[in-house]
Image 1: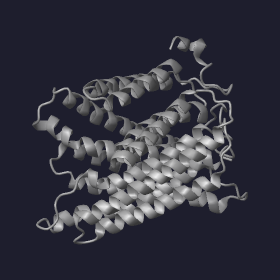
Image 2: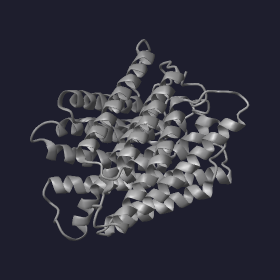
Image 3: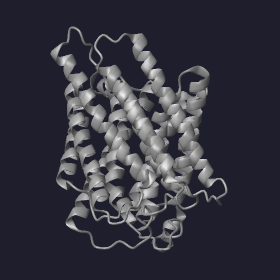
Length: 421
């Protein structure tokens, strides 16, 4: 069952932190701030460009060009893998802190430098190389911590789906990032025969990471209300990660591969992700079918993630396209829901429930607008409003910093005047 050790430290009052724990908190918070900044810049540029309010030249033009890289490289990986991994894995593994804390902080710095270069340089290849270095450093930190915990554990306790999702996402990075870096370097060494590649080149591994880490977080959201066997979830995740990475890497490194071969590999990856998403969603529904579901804020985001991925699977089945955009949009639901789950139930701190629910409503409405003809501009505006609400909710939560020891994050803040929110 998924509630074994991942919830063992919930709702406890904060105690004094060691130097390693403070280092983890600083690194994890920096990862989330980087992801939030990239989302705000990339999303803001997308909203303003959709409304026709941005010039096509200068800094604004470069930011518009950097939008895919910001959303793919600097939101998904720093938040879902590096940020939640650093802040959440020690608690889920029952250990005090992460290994290689200084390397983790160095990875944050490399990510931040790469993000700045992505937004300011017309040629993003050096930024892609730096991002690859930061991703590899972060993946090594996560995998070292998980393997060390497994080796030192006296009790053979199975990992939760969250840990499996983080571990396999880090493994996907470790195996696919060198391919991305090598392909980028190849465009420098042999520019005449190799066109310049962008962040879209890495979209398939990002989709795998969203599927793995996103479902790990979604299973964790339902840990209090349902019972799901970990082994089938782990098998499906591992098979998806291994086959997906091998197929993508082989296609990417094969010289002379024509567009038909690339399209065939892409369709195979989408079919694999579709099948995995259906199986994982079925396991989640089977584990929570007879449970009494309370629509807590994190669970709303988890259900939104499942709805978006399921919708993308249906569109993929009918039209042949749709799963990749759905996975990219699902990353937003996984990141936001993961934040509220980590801040509230995992760490035991209050956050404004009404603002959090308003954030979800605005995001859901914006998602629906994207699929209605003529409503895309309104959808972009709603996404911008949702981002502002999220920032406000996070700032209020961290500013008041009220611990919740009763087990419910929505009963806390009347003493501090938070009940009005």
